[in-house]
Length: 298
Ligand SMILES: [Fe+2]
Ligand SMILES: [Fe+2]
Image (cartoon, rainbow, N blue to C red):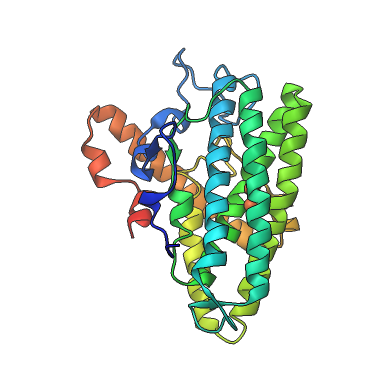
């Protein structure tokens, strides 16, 4: 079987439509707080009283579903792409790390099944919304430590934020199925972050330079994963930063604050980009790209 599988060749059937980060970022609907009435709501958080709540919740659920597939693919690839060894060399990983990634792949496969059932329960279908494959792209590094930083800390951290938002939405909407399913998956994601943090520390114990590179990579990925401020502390973001659960997963207060800062910066950059695009009504700005996108291209 092929090692280091490229994102362009992920196995998807004809139901799936994939879009790039550039296309996703160019969509102004989630960032400019526009309502059909032209009035600006006080918050953009996902709540049942939003006029577009049903569609927004279905869209987020579909995002969770494809995110679970990509997390499964990322963890699975880490089991297979590297030789078993001490982990000191960038092309080897300890066997116990592979076992943890295998356990994660098992969890993610279960999450995919749960997400499909929840999507059905919410009245949507597989492929109804586009799939942004940026999550898998951060799982393609040739250094397993960078994968841990990108997948187990940035991606799984994002999953904590998203599941918390969805769980609260289920609670407010009076949907116990949604609330409890999200709560159970949330518990797994906290474990995945913890595994990533522990392994990152252990593998780089005697290599501060490698650890520094991994944490820098995580910071870049955290900014990309704020999706132009779709996730941040601001009420203008549909998804909040789940500080308490991040704390339980082992993020320090300083680390959470850094994520909050880059997310807010991404929000401001994207608002300016979307506003400029709407004013011009052209595609000129999509050629330039947003701040987050430039990072994605880097
Ligand atoms: Fe998951
Ligand atoms: Fe996970």
